[in-house]
Figure 1: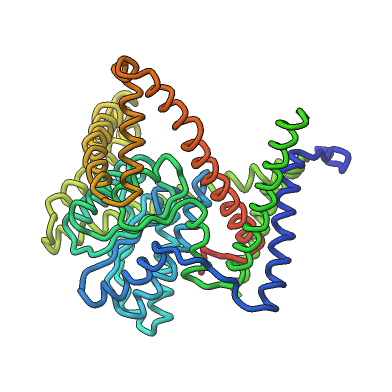
Figure 2: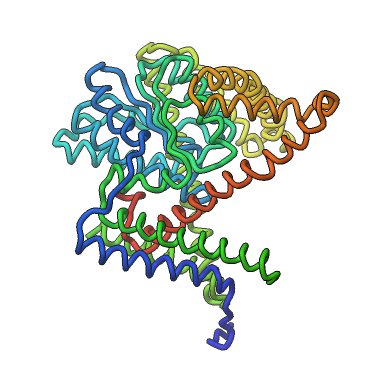
Length: 257
Length: 206
């Protein structure tokens, strides 16, 4: 096969421009954050509730159920699933440190491997690696419906105080959310899908919605790159909103197409 | 050292695939295809590990006679039965319809039946939402009534303005709210993707 540079073509230049723009803003926000200290973060009740669920579980002796959603790491649900894992990681570390009971479930075998690694590492970092039990990381089926059935059974039969679910969900969320609500289990849900948010709002006690899910690293993990990322997103959002308003103004007043 | 190697592999693979979206070149297409195939193979092997995890958990439940061990026994029997059926051609069973039959006549009906429960759960969730007793629940009740009655033929008979109100509600505030959420989520997802691809964030590792 004859491979030459002349065969190179550009595709989707607008998307590349947006991505490069976000990268530039990220770098600028990182430099600014390092010079002036932490950026202000508005309080989000969902993250506060998630943070408090772990010590509450240690006090009551009941477990916390943690789920990174019904998505996978090799599909279009990769990013919400990674966001869910970012939210769960500090909770797992906190639970391992305090000795709180917790269990994680997932319908994706790849996410199961990541969760097992995080749980093992958390116990190792807490100084008691022998506390890790394989039953703390459970693979429940490969289909969303099967997963929902498994989680419903887990929430019904096991002694669970809080149910933290963050990531990609479909309609099957309501089966799990309603089961938790019916059993009086505190529900903390993080999701960015507008079609699932009404279900989550109705059945969960605390909702982390839309872009808030992707801010978990800054709120719970407190990593500096996450704070810079939030700042960059804010700047880009202001820019996009300004561009939309300008376009509306030009179209309605000057008739520009 | 192992961690740095893992991050280097992840970043290189991710940037190669990303480059393939923005630059078209046969070499990039070959790399993209190879990486996608390797990911599929890894996912298939991970499925074996997931199966081992599932069988191990339920076997422990049955052995220890823990709460719900009967369901664990059923799960074990079902998993092993489908596994055997999957090997039907290799076992010399006539035809290759066995696995399809299990999915079409057992798994799909069970799955649909389970999803049908959503209808009842939606009602109970709506009842719980209507009991919130805040201004948000009042807004929820009012908009729910307008949309539900406006959708019915009866709505038009009662007052034609109700249908217009329903259309306006769905076209303006609901669409605006959804677009706002999607815009914010898209920016968040883009930022997370960029951080992961540049190796600044390692949710798959840390």
